[in-house]
Length: 244
Image (cartoon, rainbow, N blue to C red; front, side):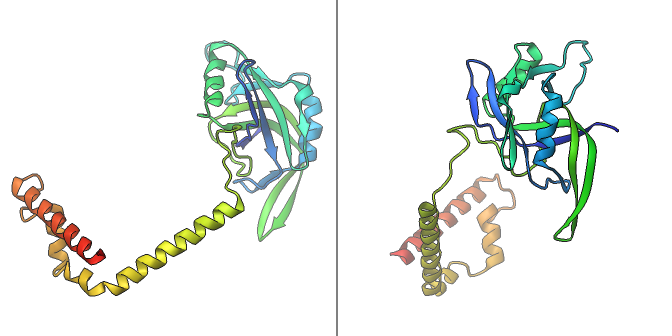
């Protein structure tokens, strides 16, 4: 069977700059953008075959046109971690010129996606909410790649302390209350001052034209600039008077 690639946005849980090492989530038990899902047990079992040669590539390149190695690092098997709904591993980047680009991009947060290259061995179909979902239940994991674009929505990047800023429930509730209050006050102001606001624009088409171009059709003309400035001043003064 032809190898497949599955793309993920990893959760970068730690960055160890001194050792060129990051900890990432390589797979989430979720339906991706292609209506596909890989069972966690399938990834866990496949790690056994991947462990003897745990290569990490750049963008699934098995060989470079220059003849140089396409390997940019490796995933130490002792750091593999299978959780209830995801699989984590560490990536240690090489010091080659090719690897340096990927390391810097991941370290600094410019690049965030991980992909796995694998062969489907067993699969089934499920129907969820009227959609037919392709589920991989057994696979052979060939390699892990650092890539630019991912498909799995749930494994979002969260570099510790940099990309993970969660609002607590109390703060979210306060924001919602404040927004509702401001909208209500604005609505009340407009209703109470409708006639005054309307008087500012006696001819809406002419107003729009003069606001943008002045009385001259050439927007760069001095006359147009002066008229536009006058119009802005008049509106600002009127609104100040209305607002008290």
